[in-house]
Image: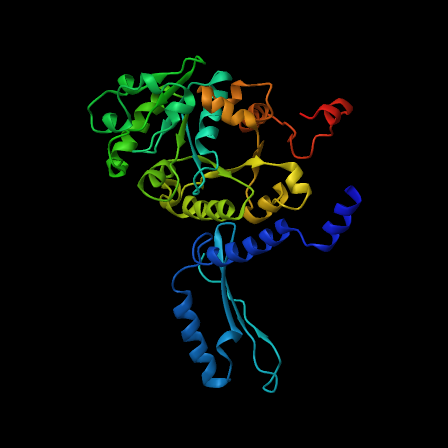
Length: 100
Length: 269
């Protein structure tokens, strides 16, 4: 039976591993709006930034990422815009530290 | 200055009251004057776990409403010298707890106790919020199971944003993970999240792992906190947990499957 179990456990992926993966995803998602809270102006900021960028370059909705990180006692606002391949440099990146 | 510690989890049935009872008893056994308060208004159970259910006369809500003094409501524990229990009300609804009243009672208790342990109800309603609000430190009781881990993460979010310390921009509430109902053999089989998995997801320091153990039920049957059953695995694990909380270094036990000896193999447990 021991031998049999050994082969069986090799084939099946463990349910604990599945649980961990599901938790990591859901917890990361829920933290976005709760713990290590991102300020509530983020969605509006994202929209307006996208509008400004679109005046000059055509970028897709999902090609802009806004992120607030806390480092020690100051916060860093990180902004990532992926520009389309044909226009200028393939990738633009502008991390902009804000408030102290 | 007294330290206020909340025992919380979000999810019900994970071992908050068991942990509150044993943790408070452990602190008192080590000579610290300790009071443990039941915040589960309407569904009190700490008194049963502590074995003092027949001595409840006045409760937490009576004290808040000035119907009794704090000394009338405190029940002296019969097992250990420095320990007192403040039971919850069984009849009132949970709105009976309000911030000003709880603050006043805690301030009064601070004068004469070293540790104030707040046993939170499940959920995130009034009683749970009140238990968390004034905390300096938090024991987050979690089972190695998806819904419990998720709820613990939510609770950590609330501690970080809605506690008094968060509101007044003081140093944040110090968080401790208590992983309970742990079954190493199921972890080894891949059926249960491991300590490392849970720590990776919740990202808070581990205070103790309490193994799934028949002694927990036996202790609650008889109304004696399991920490007093020193020979049992869960009792030993709570003893270690309290020692670690007070700054001692103790290795984590009960994390792996105990090797069965020849006779145990032969005759079973």
